[in-house]
Length: 478
Ligand SMILES: [Zn+2]
Ligand SMILES: [Zn+2]
Image (cartoon, rainbow, N blue to C red; front, side, top):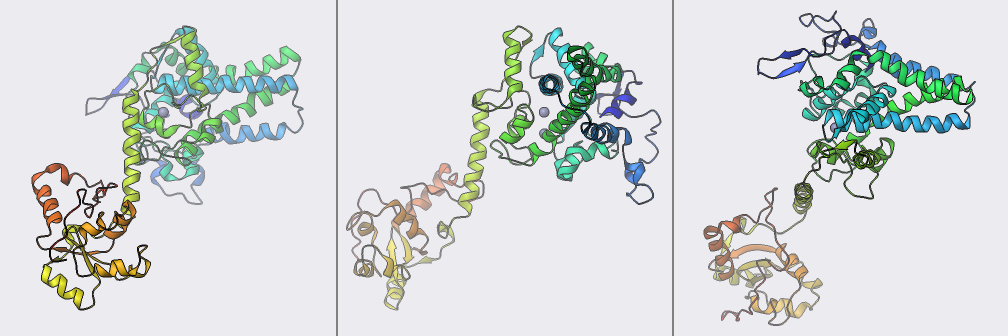
């Protein structure tokens, strides 16, 4: 946060560091006193004697101590009606500086902005006290590139509290954070100006302006300072931190569940629409975070309005076809996982092959075996529950009931075919339907593709192996 930007203010912005792999990077934000060759404090475990060296005191002052002082002071300072209205409006101004400015414009280049809009956004971003746009965007690009890994600056895998605030309160090893390319930001004069004049911009936009508006406007100097200044900063910071914590912890994953980002309306409500974070991590260059008209994404509405006013252009959207492909693949993955939990019967290829004579013999010796479409089923436990009565099913034992089952006596339902598959115990040697299936498997590659990602065979309704469409004639043995 602020500390990083303070220190980096002394570093010439336009210089870039070239790495062995040929990529260039901005000069890392760290104090000149840092010697990369010396071990960093984070390489030592936290103990009672060194814990205070692990704490980033400047950040802690900005995000914990000053807000605390503001909260306590609020006890003595009455909140005036006009100050309250202005505080909310200024909150939205600062919030949009972060969401529409720092995030969607500078970190992701999801649209282009004309100079007046850039100045408006950088002023709002300064009022939010979340570091310079350059520093913020660089870390955010790292977060997208290395999501959930050790190089992610605010990885939720290290805990919800760490991703929310811990990564700023505790010192971080600058060598750990993943590198990103920010040459485009170094060429943006607005970004460079704000980075070089960060402290001045913050004090002006975060404290002086709100205090003066309330003071000169309706004489509420202290209310402007405490409510529109300090406490508003606190709320906007906490809301933004929620994107790093809550949006990686709470909600659904409609596009990809391999990483932590999630979609949730609550996160969206707190963060001016940044809560559709699963979508955002999949399609970060899209200027929208919510793609449905009824979802809450005021940042998108703001950018759209700016386009209408001629201040924003080149709004990027991902093709709907690609978005739907991602959504479908995730749905398919969920279906596969669900399919794997169900009993579809033993796979045919793993069943023992039984000769017709053996089948008849075993049935005479007490096994309740019925052959349907070349597959042998043990119906013993089902006889008493058979909706068509005990007599009918018992009469099929030791016989081929393919035709009877498929309409000869009763055309069994899809559910009956499904249930029957859970009873199979063997495959009849020379059983015609199974033979056809096995031949199809060896000849037609498409047949082999009817397994899902978990290796389960996909059995569609009406396509069970026991289903024979044209009524088969009764086997002579029956
Ligand atoms: Zn994220
Ligand atoms: Zn992002």
